[in-house]
Image (cartoon, rainbow, N blue to C red; front, top):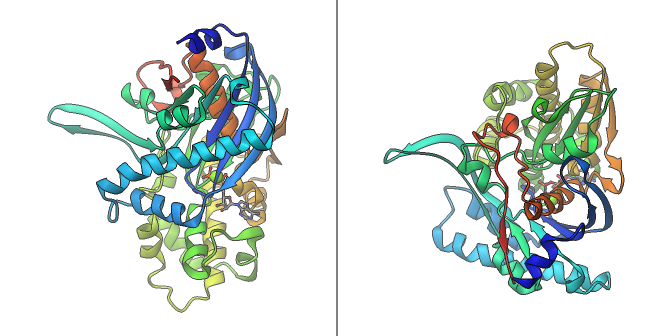
Length: 394
Ligand SMILES: Nc1ncnc2c1ncn2[C@@H]1O[C@H](COP(=O)(O)OP(=O)(O)O)[C@@H](O)[C@H]1O
Ligand SMILES: [Mg+2]
C-alpha cells in the first residue's frame, strides 16, 4: 500500500503503456512521462519498442477468439500465457533501456481482446453488454514488480457503454484545435476515427469504429501466402481491382452503413466473413483478391467519413495512425476518395503512427490513478462517466 500512496500523490509520473491490438502482430511498449492531469495534462514519450508476437501465440489468440474453435480451457491458459509474455517483454524493455523497475510508477496494460459483444442482450432478466480482454494485469504486476492498471473497457461496459473506442480521450486532450476540423484515424486490425471539429468541447467529440482496418488483408496474406501481412503492398500492388468482388464485399459489409455510435471486431470481420465472400472467386488471381480487399478497406473508411461530414466540400485534416498508415494503397485510397482532406501521418510530441495507442493506455492509467473518468459517453453510449481500469498492487 505504501507504494500506491506514494504514486497517488505524485505530480509527475513515469508510466509504461502496453498494448497488443486486434492484429496481434506485436506487443507495443512505450515509456511516457506525465505532468498535470485531465485536460491540462502534458506528456513526453521517452522510449518506444515493439516486441513481435510469435506466430504460435498469435494463432492461439485467433483460435481462442473464434467462437467455432474456442474452448474454455484455452481461454484460461491464454490469460496466463499472455500475462507472462507481456511481463517478459516489459522486463526486457526495462533491461534494454537500463531502467530499474522501481523508477516506474505504474503500467497501463490493455491486454488482448478475445471477444467483444457491444450489442445489448438480456439473460434471466439481466440486461448487459460484454467484452473480454485477457493477459491478466495481476500476473503483470506480480512478475514485473510494478503496480499495473488493466481491463480499461469493463467499467464503461458496466454502465451500458460499448467499451470502445477509448482513444478519443487522448485525441481530445492532445489534438483538439481552435481553427482546424480534424479527424484522427487509427488503422489497426479494425479502423476507428475521432472527429474533433474546430473549437470542439469534450461532449462534442464523435468517434466510432468504421469497420475493417488490416484485419481482412492480414487474413488473406496468411491464407494465400503464409505471410502475417502484405508488407509495403508487395502482393496487392501486383494485382488489379475486381469490381464484381468489390461489390460483393460492399453488399456483405452491413457494418459500414450502421449509424454511430458503433464498434466492431473479429466477431464480424473474421475468416468466416472473408471466406463466405471469396468462395465464388476460386479462379481469381490471389493478388487481385488482396488488392480488392485493400481498396475496399480505404473505401469503407472514406464512406464513413463522408456520411459523418455530410457536406462533402468541408475541409479537414485527416491524421492517420496505426499499422495501416504504412499501407501505401490504403493511404492512396484515402487521398483519392477524400479530396477535401489534408491527409497526414500522426507525428507530434513523440507520438507516432506506431506508438499512439500504447501512449493511450499509459494516459488512461495515469488518469485512473488521478481518479478521473476517461470514457466519453457521447462516444461509447455509456449512461455514466466511469473511472476506467483495475489497479493491481504489488
Ligand atoms: N509496411 C507495412 N505495409 C503494409 N502493412 C503494414 C505495414 N506495417 C504494418 N502494417 C499493417 O499493420 C498491422 C499492425 O497494425 P497495428 O496498428 O499494430 O494494429 P493493432 O493495433 O490491431 O495491433 C499489420 O498486421 C499490417 O497489416
Ligand atoms: Mg499491433
